[in-house]
Each structure stands twice: as structure tokens, then as C-alpha cells.
Image (cartoon, rainbow, N blue to C red):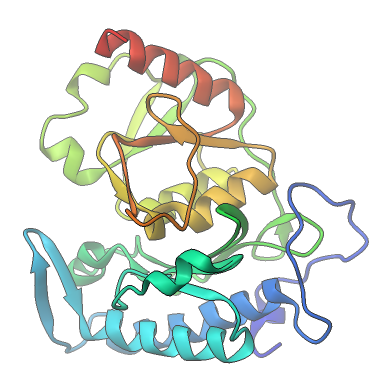
Length: 287
């Protein structure tokens, strides 16, 4: 595969972990998605800290030339190889045809657009694949830092060429929690200051999930609703590594829904930490 071997060389003899992904006789979907992420990352680098157009899709919701060009590439590249799959992306006009599909690509070509605009290297290409609403494949690529975090066909999670696991701590007070820069600025995290060892604000929901799923950080929480494309790839990575992700009230997250917004927020990490946070959140909310 073009370019991937320089970043990631998985060992096919490793024991399977997590859910396996369907592969056609001619196509390894994990390889396909990783190669697509690499190439989309090169598109983003072409614009990063350079000239491009910025538009506002909504309040504090910018989109750039880089978003659109990477999205167009990813849709053509992935759907040409898998024409029977559905497609859901932040930057593509949605079609209800995806609701009837068994397999659906769920993509954000540039998660962390605000950071991209600011020149902060906390953004990723995010590619997830779901089967009947469940995430089975995840690829995240940070092109500035050359970080590839991905599942493979054996259910192993890789950080570049390193097989990785997730934090195994069981108590919230023992872990650092990745949270949102914007939520922190709005004061939403002030009541949670003493619940964790440390609060670590970082941009890009997908990037935060990748850092947790690859064991680079401990735990993840967002207190605000997110869309399916923000979290699908990261969720697949967590599941492959034996982790968990739920809404903050404890509901399971199912993908390829008509309404793509997931409320009220979500948490991801190992199952012990997720259940501990859900219990604490519900206690605080009086549920």
C-alpha cells in the first residue's frame, strides 16, 4: 500500500482482539482506509499554515477549502472501492439511502478545523466503518505529527508501527482526562476540577479519542453533544482495544441513525472508568 509501510507494519500473526471487519476477496478495508487517510492528510498539509478560504456553516462552525477537498477525495476513493456501502460525512450532503445499508463509512475529513485554522497540530483525518450500526473499523491520521492510529484485520490497534493498549486504571482520581478547549473556556469543566488527577484540554474530539485508544492518554469526556462523524473511528479503536464508549448517562451509541447528533455528551476509555464516570455524572444530574 502506498506510503503506509513507512508508518505502520502490522504483524498478521498477532492474535485477534475486538471485532473483525468484513473484507472483500480483493480488498482489505483496513488497508484501504489507512491509505485513504494518508492521502487525505497530504491534502490537508497542502493548505496547513498556507492560504485557503474559510466559511461559516453555523455559529463557531468553520469549514475550509481543505475540508472540502479532502472530503471529495475520500468519498471518491472509498466509495469507488466499495460501491455497495453507505456514506456519511460532515462535509457531504446527507442521503437517506445510507439508512438501508449494512456497511456505512462515517467520515470527518478534517476533525479539528478550528485547530487547523489556528495552526495548532491537534486535528486528524477520521475514517470509521460501521456494520448494522456498530463500529468495526477506525483510522485516525494526524498529518502534521505523522501519527497513524488504526485497527487492522486481526482486531489489533496500532500507533504507527507499535501495537498498543489502553490505560487500565479504575479510579477517576488516578487519571488525566482529555476534555474540550471550548468547553473549558466556557467554564463547563469547573465543577469537575477535583474529580480527576488532571484535566487536559485538547482540540478535535477524534484526536482525543485516538490518544486514549492508543494509550497515549488515559480517558476522554465531552460534556456537549457530538455528531457520529466526530466519534465513530475513535469508538471503533476503543472497542478493538477492549475499551468502551457510552453517552454520559450510560446509553449505548448506535451509528447510522437518521439523527446523527448524540446527546448529552459521551465518555470513552476502559470499561471501569467509563462506568465510574457515568455513575458520577448521573449522581450530579440527580438521576
